[in-house]
Image 1: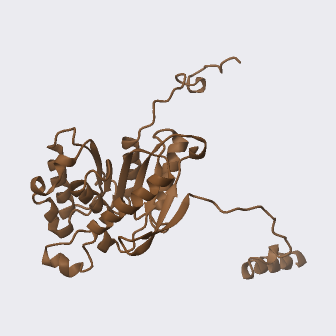
Image 2: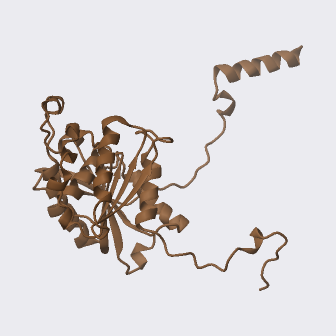
Image 3: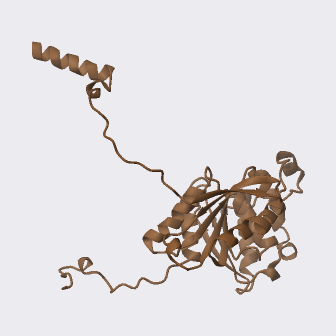
Length: 300
């Protein structure tokens, strides 16, 4: 009887006070330090009349080498936006050896609808998005301030890319069509080509600066959005696929059966980096012994 009562009281104590049974234990002291993922800069912009956060991730081994690296300029690249995500993909290149090293530069946006869109002409869009229309200004910010800041401080190579998803993907496509020499590589993931009822795509032969394109590369991906967004993407593909290959190379990935607008970014971004910056072939000695039935390790 006494043993049963003791068990009952112990069980009740554990349910009523989860920490009671461990109150006498002293937490183990362990060392700790913050995890560093690049460097964050505060860049004052005369073009925007504002200060913006620039976040820079450098590839593994950067400090010990004299190599020059391609740069991926990431739109929506604030610390509370997509910088950590894409910097992680940069780090994956160092771990997997399946694509090459790069510098990732995250460029903060504050009002995406205002900064990443061209001024619409359709009255419905003017009414729905009255703050829109700042894409040209934001592009000047990139050209005149962000790119010079990065290239003056880091060992940048010949290729530079711009990456964005959704409205940022729209900005990527808009930049390719209007200012194709600003970047060499363009990564547009589920770009919002429904913008202004697809008006920028209505007469691409007249409005796009295709003659200025020289060896540009566009990675284009889409999720299951459909509707006017898919139609805009199809129009863009038809136009670009008709261009001479020395002007632009297009890679298109259709994730409409496997990804939504909310889930497409990660796989598409990784596929884009693998396509644009492939690693050299692995220089191993063929299939390792432990992958072959009955094989033995080499003698030392």
